Length: 165
Image 1 (cartoon, rainbow, N blue to C red):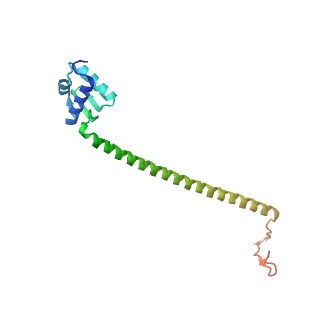
Image 2: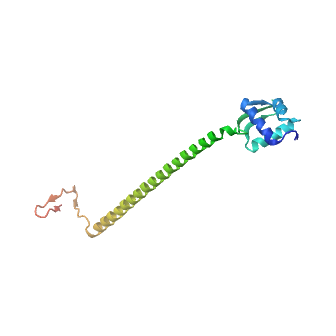
Image 3: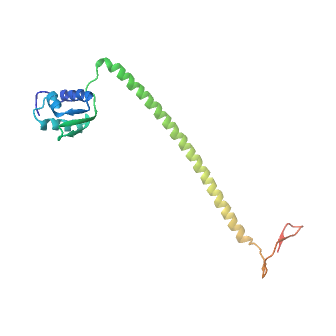
């Protein structure tokens, strides 16, 4: 690589160029970044992409670099209070969001616990009723009579409320 300017300066220059245009011809890049060869330029661009400093595509055939996104090299010291204020607001909103999410999770857990208890109670009632029904079937089997003509209609006995077939 050419040693005429250092990498941070080249990256800052690349950011300035990327801010002005999303398509950067190699000739413009080599001139502004002070690279002697195309290979040096491409190696620098690959390193910048790999390091996450810039997102883009290298097009050696058309001798262009297509910029998708880039990092801003420097912040003007006069803008630091505004940047700090923006970050503080972002932190406050993030904390509020986290608080709401935790409350929603707690509410969801509470409702889930209630549903599980209700489900458990229903299952226990089903088991109890099933066991009671099985016990009743074994101790008092139904009395049904049938004839060649089919089942007879039950007749109610008035005194006891029983049915007779």
